[in-house]
Image (cartoon, rainbow, N blue to C red; front, side, top):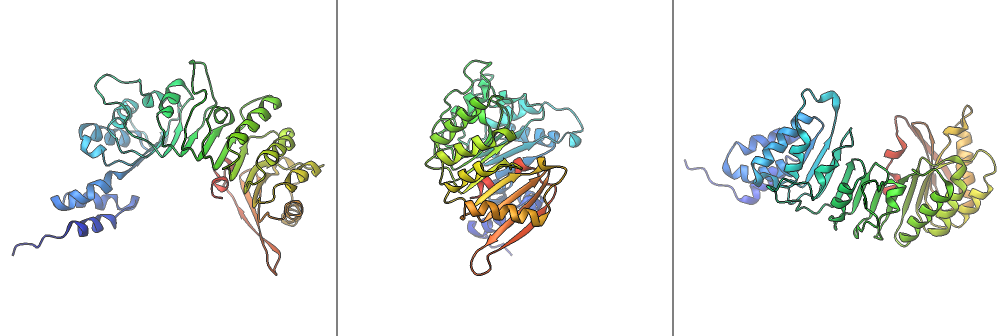
Length: 364
């Protein structure tokens, strides 16, 4: 009996049903079943590539280098180096460099280098004359590299970039390393304040910055500059590593420049004399969420009843608040206010958290 061929749409539905990290082996099996299934399964198999082991990532990159057709299927490429899983030294970064130049349709890129020294793989000028250069336009980039002219040159060409994560402070030791970097589509930034200060105007909605300057005057100048250029679109702002003595000035700058924010954090809550903080909150009429750090209240951290009183205190001066989070080291205490007839606070405690990894600032 001659088998009845299935329609391309049905093959596509079969492949689509096997998406997810736990079904990759099934997609690989489909590729070996028949030419028709291979045609529909290969794009799904190579669409998202994520690795934690250097040797596995190296093998995948070599496959893409040797088969440019497969590289065109890649939309997401992530590598987060896990030294405990790397058994043998391999020339990974040269392979990543060559493979990226074949991923013309790449949209999301995450490269987390424990040494932070391999940002050259993204440099448009770093080539051997045999590759085609970088052709992709990213939507999302999360990069753990030292800030350098190489990284700035790469980002300058990403005109469609909407989400950017970097982890190093701005440096001009290699000349112009990103002064006035123009990313016209950028909506979310997570990185150092000094880098944010060098970004151009864009429809920024969510902003998380780590303080990396030592003088309060320089800090407030950079902060006000960032808030001002994005004041019309910002919805959530998070400031990490903020010294306690700078809190009142920082919150005043936020309230004066962006009074329509929906979320602010992460401010060390003053133990005493909070009236200036209250004054800033009064002008933030739309604020729904605030995160404060009370780790420095040691050794007498507030118990839940005291936390509830503090949450209610903040809401007295900003009645729009519905969500208050208290951080004590890696523990997050969430207090949620329910309006209506109940008018009560509900709480939840979550341990093993890391404040910079919290996503509240980008979910409003």
